[in-house]
Amino acid sequence: MWKEFKEFAFKGNIIDLAVAVVIGGAFGAIVTSFVENIITPLMGVIVGGVDFTTLKVTVGEAEILYGNFIQSFVDFIIIAFSIFLAIKFLVKFKRQKEEEEVEAVVEELSKQEELLTEIRDLLKEQSNKN
Image (cartoon, rainbow, N blue to C red; front, side):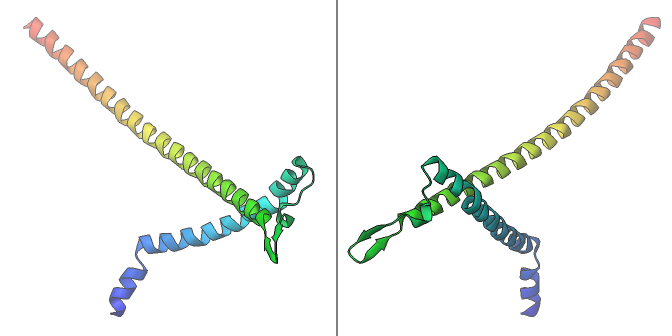
């Protein structure tokens, strides 16, 4: 049983996933700080100095904190956009690397074709001489 657990726990995918979760959590904290400390104050200036986190509506004794919802929504949009940009960058990088590999193969084929053409031409010359 210990052996099975060890095989499961130390598979590359599990460790990669754990690292991704930790990095994702840290990234989320950075984005949240960015939104709370930079974006929200700027949005407050744009809309006339409103602090979103203090926006609320009182209905009877209940307080509806819609400002916190706006804050969470902005956090989500920025996190989603950041992830989109990161994935777009990674896909572009991967595609560029694949194109370079294809170019190398095409270049290699071109050299082979060139050599084969030279061999063909030499064989034709020899057959014409005979």
